[in-house]
Length: 435
Image (cartoon, rainbow, N blue to C red; front, side, top):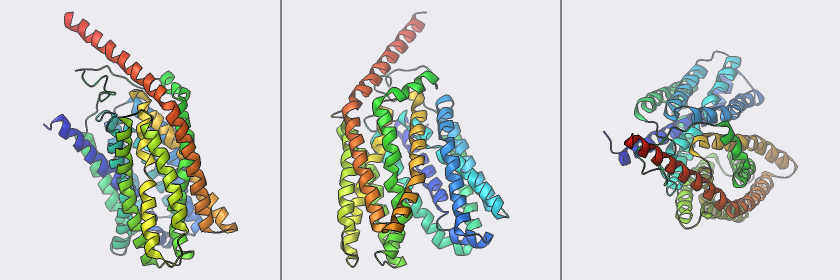
């Protein structure tokens, strides 16, 4: 039997593996696009429909997953999500026609909206004073998954083919579903909160509609929701257009593009943990700490991107150094947003709160690449990337500044509710012991 301290790190390691391999499977579609198009004899528009279908399914299901996680055992639902990931990937790999592939690939979006339950369960293993670091550590799995997907696509596509690679990643998803189902235990909701962690037993709290609707009355949370819509613009513009920008407007070879982006992604990965750790550090000193760190991160990222993209195309060395420095600051806000959402919401509606956040972000994610493309047609990719990223980061910094002003009151309200809950639990246990 693992000790509680060691066991929670087993949970983190299991979820890291889940996110790493899930992101790898999700993002493999990019490196395998040409092979898939050749197999089904389709054009770019038809291939784009494949990606869009999965994104739409994932976005629509965010609220449903959020409700289910807050209502039922999150560990078992995460095992189900992993099984769905593996099985739908397998089904898409055996699709004989384009129509079948389009439909089956859309079903892979079912599990793409499963992360709110993962973060919610982790919040009941780790207290608010260190959640930022844990979320930052887990989020490292996303860029690593992207890198792993690129490597699998480059190294195995010629020998296994795109179907063989999907058989491999699908099998890993099914295997992980059993590890999660039998290895990850459900934690009582709110167990890691300072007010409740010393209680031997706490009540069972599940989704309540009135509590969920109350989320939209929290001013700092509503601002985080709005910020999320704009905050994903830079991510998606860079993801979809930066490769082409390096090739067409800076004259990079394919090898130079890969080296540049791989290095930047590795540094970006560190930014998640750094952001979470710095957020935890300042949160221990002021309830405004996380929001102020997020604000500083996006403002610094905006300034550094302007400087980086002003470097002449021929100076690839200096461009790489500044791009990596920019990449370090880009993800700093991410773990602090998740942590702040949980700093101001009751444990039984945390999955729902984060699902709403991600649902709103999905709308922004769908809009950003199109906006960049329209600007690029009329001007250049340089101007498209710079104008969208800088303007939205400045806007997000303003939102974070207002959140920093408002959030202490929402945190104090939550802590008061949890203290009342703890007093009730102690009174009930005392009554039971004397009965």
